Image 1: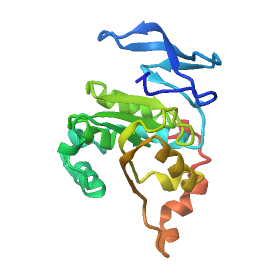
Image 2 (image 1 turned 135 degrees about the vertical axis):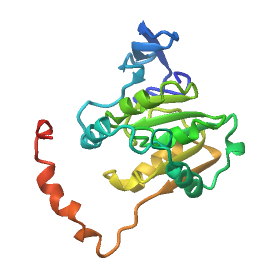
Image 3 (image 1 turned 90 degrees about the vertical axis):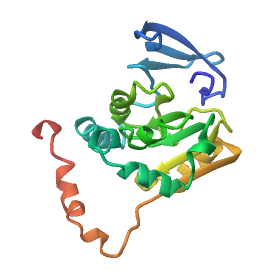
Length: 224
């Protein structure tokens, strides 16, 4: 992964200092540092971290730490996520072979679980602590890599990925058009991007969750 990552401050390559390795030899704790400006980024739990712990998506991370396996086909015994993934991207397993794929807003790894069964390398990125839940769910998949970063500061070299998908995520970002333009920069010129959003209908705002949200978001987490 280090070959794909850069310092966004000066676009220089990153080096790595390992402090602790896991049983397979992968870095568990360490530091990434810029070879040019000396900016440093921590690696904890085997995941490079490029964002602050608390951010606009913190509540999503908390939610998925508790319910980290509910949506995974490999856990719930269904094919719901796989069917949705292949129908919404319109890709085939064969065309992904040997390619690099970017999952933007991977959450707990619902679609990483699907794509990891192909012969591709995939990088799952999430701004929230859900990235730790994704790693816990899929750390046995050698072709899956994890990065905690913002969609507005992805830290990947330009024109790196062959495929990218962002399913049901972009509408939650503060500035969706800007987010999409930045994701596109990580793609190769002939790359393919699949983006889907939830449709907002006239009666959507009548759903109970929108009425309860102003109240529940103020409740302390320890209350649950």
